[in-house]
Image 1 (spheres, rainbow, N blue to C red):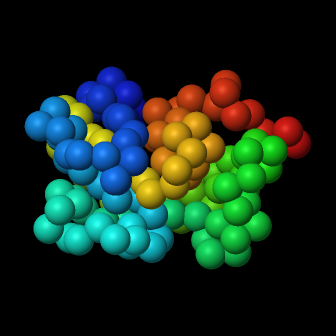
Image 2 (image 1 turned 60 degrees about the vertical axis):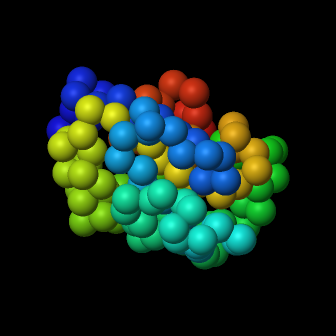
Length: 130
C-alpha cells in the first residue's frame, strides 16, 4: 500500500498542544506520556504495539550516536510486526492527514521519525549498514 500518495503523515511531540490540522492523532509509544491526561492529550488511537520493544528502547536510551543502529533494528521489528503495521496502514489510508505522536524530547532521534520513514518507504536518511 502506498501510504505517501494518499496521506500526509506528520510527527509531533505529544506534549505540544494539539492542532486542528493534525488530522488523526496516533500515539506510537509503548508507555503513556508522563503527566499527560488522556483528556488533554487529544489522542485518537494509541498503538502501543507499534512502538519499539522494551529491550530495543532500553538499549537505545535516546543516545543520538546509537540512532542509526536503533533505526535499523526498529525497522526489522516493524518488518516482523506485520499485523500492527497493517492496522496502522489501514488507519492511515482512511485519513488525509495523520500525526504520529511521541513523547521523547529529541525531535530528530526517536521512534516516530523511523516509523514515518518506514510507512512512507523512505530509507535514504537512515539506511541499513548491513
